[in-house]
Length: 293
Image (cartoon, rainbow, N blue to C red; front, side):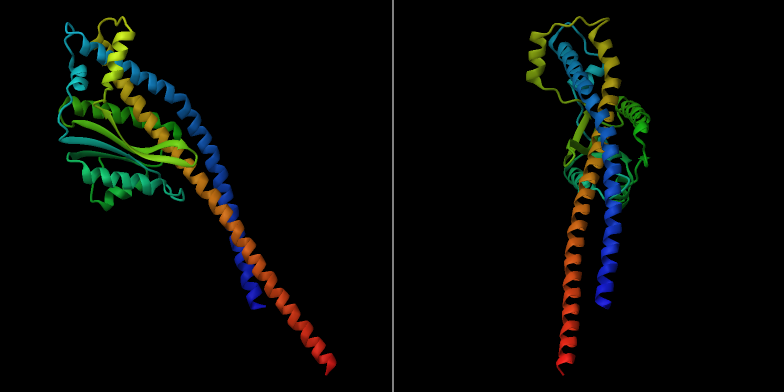
């Protein structure tokens, strides 16, 4: 009977765990829907913003009469990357499968292969802060426990600071390391350079031929206005990509945990029934043996 009591106790424990994992799955599903809605709404805007910036830069580069301004120079003649700023985006909590492990592995590879010096590190999420401490790196900015509504404040702060550092010559590029959201069960660790922006020369030439824009007051002034919005938009998109990836990974992990708990409960129940059957059989044999005696 002691064996049966132990198995019953384990079954109750696994059932309690299964209830927790199911609840976490439902919570993650709700958060995923909110993040995904904002991400899906932002992606077309971010894509069009990048297209417009590329066209304006291509217009400045293709017209010999236009003297490139400071902003255009940054895109047309990027500096050698000796000092860079990096934004690492992870999660505040675990139990989300390989979400954190994958993005931190990408961060390790980037740090190992990057010849430039990281002079400014921003970490978003407790797991990113822990990664920095383990590597004896002191983050200049820590953003922990961010709600979905707090992304815009962080984006505005980082973009303004990074732009000022770039113009002052303190950094030569801004990178973001995050998880790109493909679906609820698939995320891709990504290293993205926000600026200087990488221009597609073929698309740049095609836009210059097919589309003729009237830019007022002049292309340089338009670009000066677009660049801060472009940087903020890309940073916001990266944070939303990571948020949706985190909740999708957690939802998938909790679904798998619930399924495994169900399988374990079934196995334990089968074992318990076998033990009970063997016990009953032994009791019947003892009764029959006693009667025959």
